[in-house]
Amino acid sequence: MSQINEEYIEEYIRSIIPANEGYLREIEEYAIKNHIPIVEKEVAQLLKVLLRIINPKKILEVGTAIGYSALVMASSTTSDCQITTIERREDMAEKAKINIKNSSFRDRIKVLQGDAEDILPTLEEKYDFIFLDAAKGQYLNFFNECTRILNKRGVIMSDNVLFKGMVASDRLVIRRKKTIVKRLRKYLEHINNLEGYESCILPIGDGVALITERSEDNE
Ligand code: SAH
Ligand code: MG
Image (tube, rainbow, N blue to C red; front, top):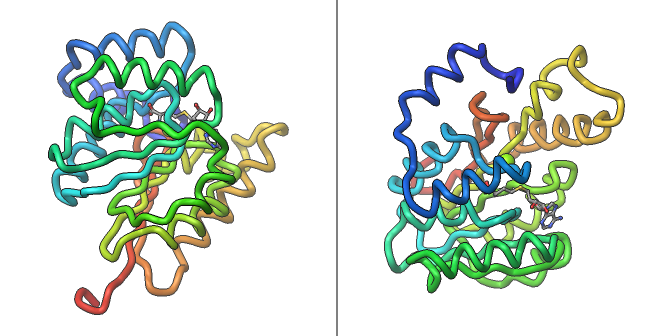
C-alpha cells in the first residue's frame, strides 16, 4: 500500500485501467521480477492524457530505469516528438537501450547515461514537457536547471513527491529517510510558492506534482 490513498480506491482505479500487451507488458513483468521501480498504472495514464493535451515535440525525462515510462510517453505522442532520457546507472541505461531498440520508437528516444546533476547543465535545447523521476533528494536542484530549459507553456511533472505519505505526515517518516523527506517538503513548498508559476499536487501513485509557467497571454 502506498499510504497515500485508501487501498480500496487505489485498487479500484487500477482495476479499471486496461492491461498492456506486447513489449510494455513484458517490461512491466521484468520490472516486478527484478524490483525495478516503474510508474504506477494510474500515473502512466496521467502521463498519457497530459501528453495528448500538451502535444509536446520535445520531452526530457530524468530517471530512465529500463525505459518503461519513456516508451509510455513515446506511445502517447506524435512521430515528430523526440524524447531524451537521463539515467545514472550504466546497467539500467543499457537495459533501457535494448528495450527501446526492440520497440517501434527507437528513433525517437535517446538515452543519456550519466548523473543528471552533470548532464542537465549541459543541455541547451528547450523542452515542452519534463518528467522528473529520479533522486528525490535532488529535485530542487534539478528543478532550477529544468526551468532554464523549459519552453513557454511547458510543464514539469515530478513523481514520488509524497514519498509513501512520509512527506505529508511525520508519523510515517522513518529515520533513514528523514533527509529526503525534508528535501521533498522544501521542494513542494518552493514550487507551490514560486512567483510566475502555477502548480498542483495530485495524490495518485506515490504523489505527483505539476507545474507550469504563467505566461503573459494566459494571466
Ligand atoms: N521513469 C522510470 C523509473 C525511474 S526509477 C519509469 O517509470 O519507468 C528512478 C531511476 O532514476 C533509477 O533508475 C535511478 O538509477 C535513476 N537516478 C537516480 N538518481 C539519478 C541521477 N542523479 N541522475 C540520473 N539518474 C538517476
Ligand atoms: Mg517514480
